[in-house]
Image 1 (cartoon, rainbow, N blue to C red):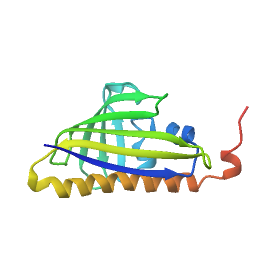
Image 2 (cartoon, helix red, strand yellow):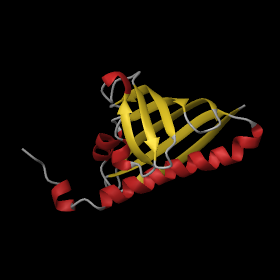
Image 3 (cartoon, rainbow, N blue to C red):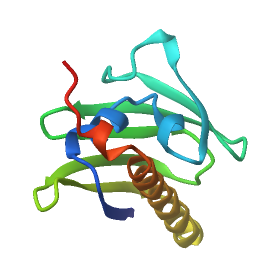
Length: 156
């Protein structure tokens, strides 16, 4: 049986600025607090569909994921879990951003579908949801900490 975790938030920054940060499949350590380091295997760029990222969590756990979709028009990326600490099978997640025109903000949602043993379902849902929300909270802090005058300035 497939299970789904869905989390969403609004970030007080323009969608293009948020997308510029999160679209790089190798940039998790720059914005997600549970990721300490990340590399793209085989030296591929972090925006090449099919690339595999290997990252290490602050807990020391290792994760490998494959980028399945990256679309700058729809501002969506999806990826599959190859190896990691979660007791899941067939894990596929997507992160999508949309503009909120009221205030020039960003609506962001992160969802995952996966299979797991019934005994693991609740703990797995909780862990995935927490990881997603921690990412949203970190993005909010990142964009709150920027200088609004500099952030809104157009560079020639």
